[in-house]
Length: 119
Image (cartoon, rainbow, N blue to C red; front, side):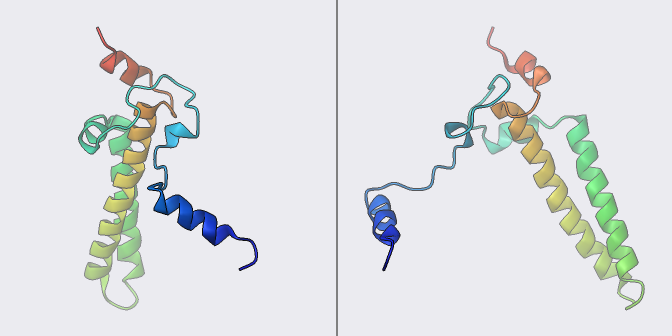
């Protein structure tokens, strides 16, 4: 086998270890942490105006690109719908990433700290 790396990984997984998906365990946030591991519902409820603007902008651009790319082969409708679906998914993921980043303290989060601070 050479390096013996396979043995180490198998032993680690056999002991119950897995991938650590908590980014805050390996990277220190620069801003106050509101929620170390925010649930889906809290993250979506935390979307702000800029997040929605990004989502709709990405969706609108994707619909336009889908329409324009479907002109020549004469499949404007299906191409536009496909572009729109890709845009909605990409825009949502981008907005979700920003919202979760603010809650976890990786992006500036003055509004979130004020809103969720414990009284």
